[in-house]
Image 1 (tube, rainbow, N blue to C red):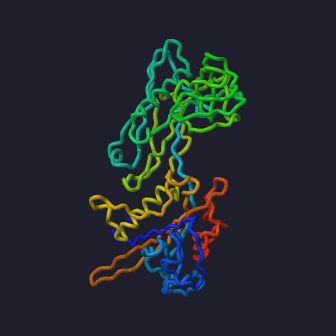
Image 2: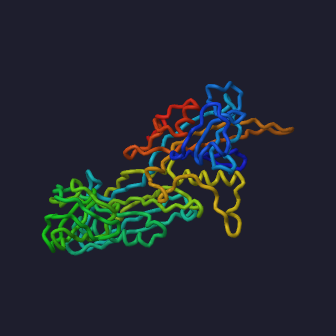
Image 3: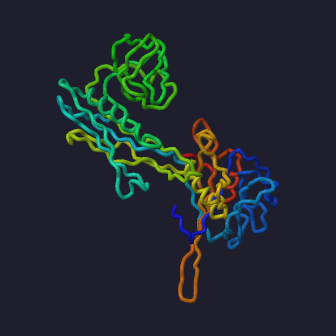
Length: 412
């Protein structure tokens, strides 16, 4: 959403853990509305709903801040003059690009004693790359008996090493993918991101012999050290944890190989004022005969906690909380559920946008003033999916009061 100094901009947040006991007609005060609880009120600050009001009536959205603390109150809103729109939560996605084999078709072009490189051009909308994009590389020179496997693992290994020098988050993860039939392990696999060690009880591989394996969709060469433990030829690039045996095992008959490049979410701290975005890049290969496939586009998401945190932070600045400018700085209030302070499944939001425009006339000029009240509704987790409908939270009650269908604000 475009922020301008002459816009009226207000953000209010719901917390799905906030208890609610308000009923229509109740006068809302700091002592009867919980921290993170929302309520729609009339001009007298009594709980109401849109259907009860007449066109032209004034209403407000209120967020509780705790007993003895000033309520967070939206600008005055007028029924019949505001436009209410919604956006359900959508998870962020990182870009994925394949060089060579893409999971269905394609090969890496390879020759003996030849040098190859992947060039990554950063397209991020940050200060460093907005006008002068940076280029990153992964390089490898084949041997006298070159194979696609040699080139793929060589490029991936060098890419992992080079990305380890990138500040903050490493920027990209490199993985090898190949065709070939999977024979699953008998036991699950315990892996750690960035580590070469892995454990799978009774994996069945011959000790000391390099074996082609696949773990959670990515391929490695593994050398067993005993009946349960094995070592990968490059650091594991997936998430740390346990991979089910149905998605891990040995691979036979692979003839086509490729390298995938996957963006890595940057760490975010709203108080450090880091901008939030998903990584965007353009990848090319030194041999133009090798296909480059765009598998998934980058998407910042909607209602992700980073966006909500930044909007809340900016809104409190407009409310006059300028203590961050002091020495030492005083942190602004925060209701948003951030990760890792809270679980990711509890930190999802859907949004209600209440917008209006005013005609501002002067003696010699006329201009339009715009305003927005953005209400973020904290979703409850239901088997991994964020839900608003049926939760009984103040967010659901507010959606109903505004004439909305809570189910439309469930995670998309």
